[in-house]
Length: 152
Image (cartoon, rainbow, N blue to C red):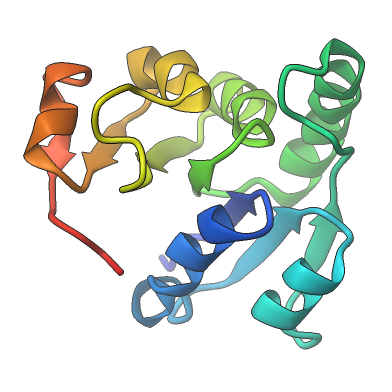
């Protein structure tokens, strides 16, 4: 059986990280969750299925709750086998719902944060099925992560 993949990302560098993994995810049925922005539409493309989340998402409790409700609706309807993200604040509500509904969770910590972990990374690390880092120093914050090196 081919797994269905949900790709969750804020626009910008986080989204660019997931786009760089296209050789992997493009082989499988997939859909996106991102921001309704020119950046997201341009990088993802108009042939992809995209759901739009509520922004700003970072440190915004109202939009976190809205995105949690949205995550329940989308994840329940789509039933992805795998949810993958590199952040930012959009990821935690979708990962939480995905975990509760049985999806496997993959998080890629962005390369930019070597000295300190990201807030999303800290929230997701305890329950991610696979947590990927790109620099060996990130293993100090995430000792059970898998270091793959720079994906860019």
